[in-house]
Length: 242
Image (cartoon, rainbow, N blue to C red; front, side, top):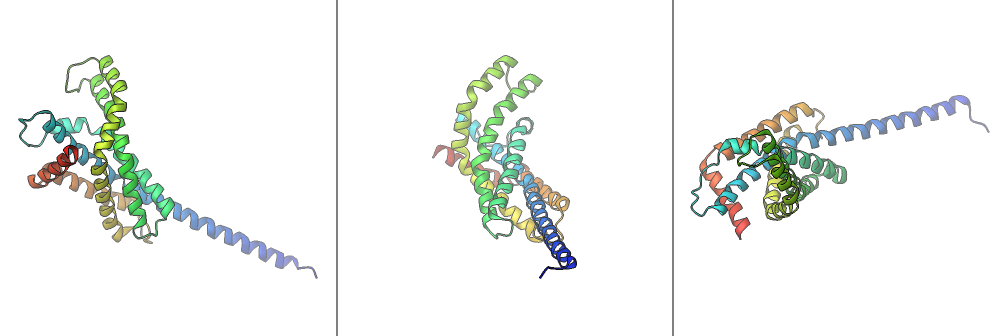
C-alpha cells in the first residue's frame, strides 16, 4: 500500500523541523561556550599581571641582598605589561574554550578545574616567550631600562629566549596554578549571577563585570594594603628559593 503524498510531505517537514531545532541548539551551545571563554579573559590578564608584578620584585630581591621590600617603579610595570596582557588573555581564552568543549558548560566543577589546569600549564610558557619580545620592543622604541643597541637587544632576545622560557616556566608553574585557581573562583562567582547557562546571559554585561572585578583585584594587589603585597612576595620567594 503506497503512502499518500501528504504523508510523505509531513514526514519530510518533521525531519526538517527536527534538524532545524538541533542546529539551533548546537549553535546556541557554541555561542554560550564562546561567551564564557571571552568573558573570563580579563581574569587571565589580571592574574598574569599580578604574577609578573610579584616576580619582578622577587627578581630584584634575588639580585640585591641589600634590597628592602617596597613597591617597584610602576612605569617599569607598565612597560613590561604587554607580555602578560597578551599571554594571560590568550591562554585564558583558549583554556576556557577547550575546557568547555571537553567538559561542557553544564558541569559544576570540571570546566573550571580544567580551565585552571590548562591556564597554569600554558600561561608561563606564553608569557615567558613574549617577555623577551616585549624587552626588544622597548629597546627599539627607546623606552628600555638599559643602554644597548637594537641589534644587541634582538640578539639577546633570540639567544636567551629558550633558556629564559624554560626557567620562567619551571619556576612560575606553581604561581600560575594559584592564579588559574583564583581566576576560576572569580569566574564562578560572577557566573553564579549571570552565567552562560542563564537564559538572560549577556556577553557584554558579563565581560563588563569581569573587567571591573579584574581591575579591582589588580588595584588591590598593586596599590592596596601592603600586607597583601608582602604576603604574595613571601609566597613567591619561598617557591623560587625553596
